[in-house]
Image (cartoon, rainbow, N blue to C red; front, side, top):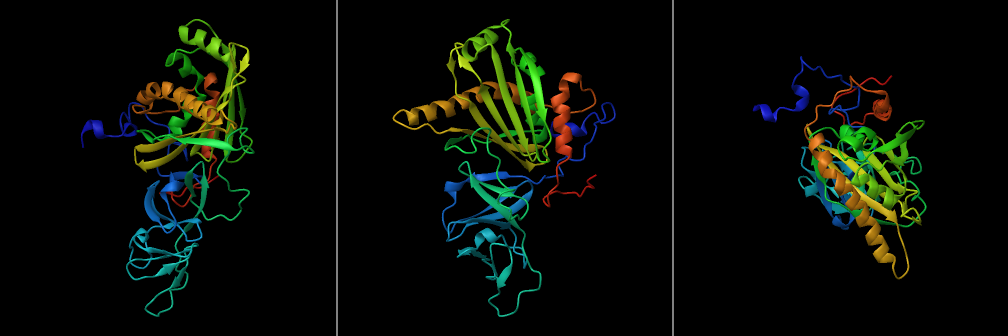
Length: 362
């Protein structure tokens, strides 16, 4: 293997030992949470698709009733990919020997006349359609109220408009890339934007953490002067992390154009998943409240594309960092408190059956 093909965490092991964590930055652990797959519009009635998600092969199909279901991909008889089969009602029939499975993964029919072996079941997984995407949760769950794809701040009871961006890729664990929004130091050093930040952290919930950053622009650089002019002297944004695999960002909170005209808040989601060891997929999703009336379509287009423009402005500079990082947790400062809290939150989460190792939760 060439030296440039070795993952960074395997380099400098004796000279710069890495601190390991139970769940944070652990490629072998997949936490329970919602993972996005593909556009809802790409799965018509009777369609089925085989996908690889976090090292786990799944079959997702849309039943004749319009509902979407997800099972483990391999037939438990001889291991054929079930996406080759046929959707029949809410059931899926294997292409090879026509064994039929219901939406809960139970074998309900074998054409040869023999009875299905006892306890012959596939894992089935909770599925939701939200933000124009199909989401999968690595566990069967029937509690609809508890188990829900997280809504964005202030939008849970509003009609929304959505723009799905192209997936991009990073060469470090997504737990690390998720830190980007709560590291105020890098706003100054990388992006040349100085904001005296006041940070509020709410980690009282078991599966998510909320971090709000609020401060005042200085006016030492051109970027800061323009920020103060366009957004107001003070600026704030918030990050919410859910289940270790979803991050939501709300920008432009209390922003006023020229310190007079209230600007709309801008919202976006980041959905993360593993592709392979050392490579992750990041899907940006831009979301906002839906404006109506004659100018509604233009306002919706403007808000969604403004959100995208803000993100793209920072994406390239941050990308070169996270594609070359060997993250360690041995030298934190007091101002790194949000990152420390975030890592502690990740380590409290619950591993799913998609994990490659079992850990004892204390």
